[in-house]
Image (cartoon, rainbow, N blue to C red; front, side):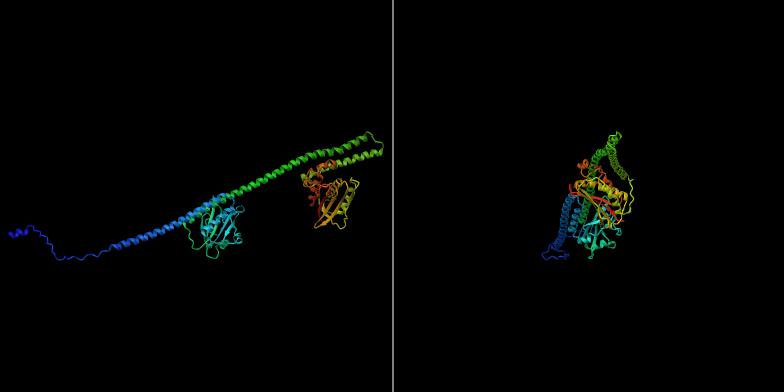
Length: 480
């Protein structure tokens, strides 16, 4: 029982073993990584991270420096473009920036010209002027055979290259980059850069190009507006000057018309007074014999002829201006015409010392004229020459020239000043106003002669070296 109770109860814990003075038995230790190796690995990793950070920092600094430089350049360009209103200067500045900042091999800038019908090359680099100046392109699509979005910067496909683009591309495998200058959906111009085939655009480069093209587009648009406004201003100035000239001419014409009316009324009254006076004398019997009566009637008839000539001039001019005056040019002998004119001209009143010379009409061909109208012109011209020549001579000269005959009436009369020559063939104008009372006349004769000669396909002109030096009036007629 005792054994059984002892085995069933709790067993006593044995006392700890006493320390032994002999060496202890150490179990084998697990292998451990040295602490220095861990630190070395951490240092190497930190160094790699630092090196990477340094490279990134250097790249960022380089990008920041380039971006800062580009912003400075763009700011400078913006100041230049804002200060100019000339499209040529805008293009020159833009091309310089593109060539210097992006190191393109070749580049050309086009602008919209010729009233919007085409794009004209304005500046180029990397090509001779003779090469790039001939690269004209149509509008509104400068590359109709090339698939592209005209309002977006992009690389141009070499397969769609037209001949001008092929010249710009060259033989070195360059790629073409298209930069449009668009404002309000209007392609005002564009630049095409020939870049190396392996060139990749950085984001900051594309940003700078975007800013530059916007500035260029606005400046080109402003230059276009300025050019258009300048053209309108010039046109307005020309119209203003023309209106001033017309007003001056109207004022002069009004003055001449007033003088003409006063002069014509005097010219008409003078022969009419003579007619009435001589007729009254004959009616009242105030003459001594039949010869004196006949002389009075002859004077009355001459005054009537003069009055009729004045009225015919006025009526002829009215018909010419209304387009109802007709001429019928035909081949006619100038010699025969001068033979008819000669006795009438020699009967005109002239000073005793004035001689009248006639040309030799041998071998002079027929001319295309209306005989009656040319006779009227010749008589008027000869009458003026004899009337304004106090001494010397009046000579008729005929000269044959290629395809025409020139007939000149040369006198040694009072001459015509340079100022008066400019208005001699105008209505109501006389050579010198001071002579109008002395020599008479309405100032319509040469105007009518000018119209008649032009209607017959000829011309009339007058030359004079000045007052007192005579004058030469020249008629030209086509040879039949």
